[in-house]
Length: 158
Image (cartoon, rainbow, N blue to C red):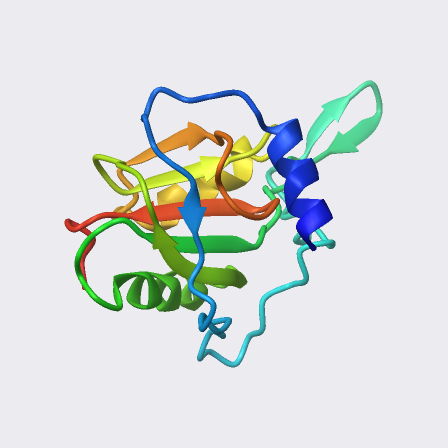
């Protein structure tokens, strides 16, 4: 696991202007499971495509696929105890799998969703579902996991 994290950090070594420090994950964090009857899809499978009105292009029918549901790590960047767990439960209620819940050391001014290359469409989809996400930015080194990372700050609604 340490090797995977080191590899991800090396691949995502593009610094970002947030002046944020490394992330610290709580060792007691437990995965959050959505309470709805529908279970989230595994991260390795994209969500089924939805049909939009069919368009004829040289005899072929086309439809626009939806962005895949990716795993999300939720990190608390405030002094509000339990905020990351509350936010993780809200994200999971929208059908997104939660991989890690913990704390973030550094300074992020507003609740931000970070994505890796190729994940922008999924990040925008989650941000559209959750208005409390105030901005979407490319991932910077020091963030955990290969999925999306949500850093929540004090203004996050409880």
